[in-house]
Image 1 (tube, rainbow, N blue to C red):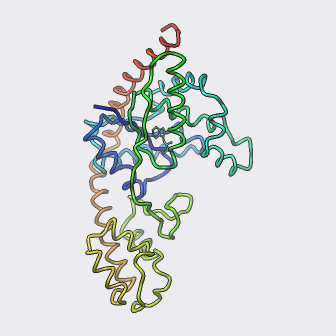
Image 2 (cartoon, rainbow, N blue to C red):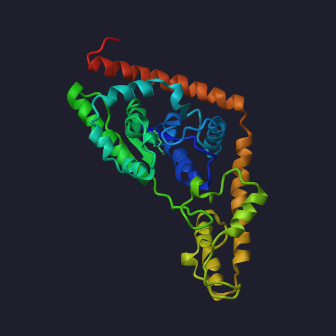
Image 3 (cartoon, rainbow, N blue to C red):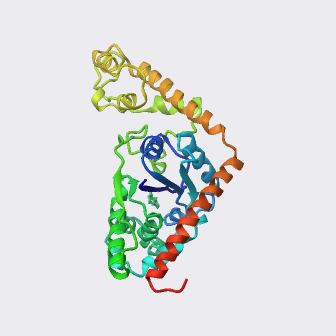
Length: 322
Ligand code: TRP
């Protein structure tokens, strides 16, 4: 079986966009590939030096499991607990031209947005190098990522080609597996993001979910219930298409005819999303922190063994003593 590697940074609680965009995909990939999933905690420090991330590690792993990722089939671990990633990253940095990293669009964006130049760390520039190590240390053929990560993966492929040319065939060139998921907007119609404070979290309570759903922006021309609405431009309608159990055609027709008002329409959506969240939360409750620690220990052991073997192979090819 070919290998898949993917990671997620522990920057906060996960939201419904993560469930659709990442976790459900991770679950599916287990059927076809040998999968390695990890908490990219070292990467999370590139733009956030806060020390309160600990609570997210276990919470995110519980979300991963509740979404159906099976720890018997997938290797789940924490990046910093497999120190070989960092070691390989240091070696790779010797064959990575700084210019490749400086012209990476995600880096250029970050630089544009950071006013205090002292906040642009070496770690931020070399983000793609560590990410490359994460992937190629397992000989992964595929990496499921969103579009934003494609430039990083392109650098990974360039590093692999250069390394293999310099030191002989050592690494597999990883290919992106673009995840096709509907782009979820937050309840204010902007991209769902922690920084916009517009997320619907997997941990919402009935009350907090109700508030958020009823705050969602609908067709601005549908002011009163009987006004004809335009489902095509309504975020609530998009959500119905993703989470809803109601007949979409009928919602669309009744909205356009003025028979269905936004309040009633949101009530249906609220019930359907609540149902999804309650089921997820119930499955999540099955796991204790002790169990999670145990799963992460097993993951670390398995990952570390493979990673160390690869690292030895790399050092050998570079003519280092091992
Ligand atoms: N950069 C990824 C993100 O922000 C996280 C990540 C780190 C990753 N290492 C990885 C993803 C290796 C896939 C493979 O989402």
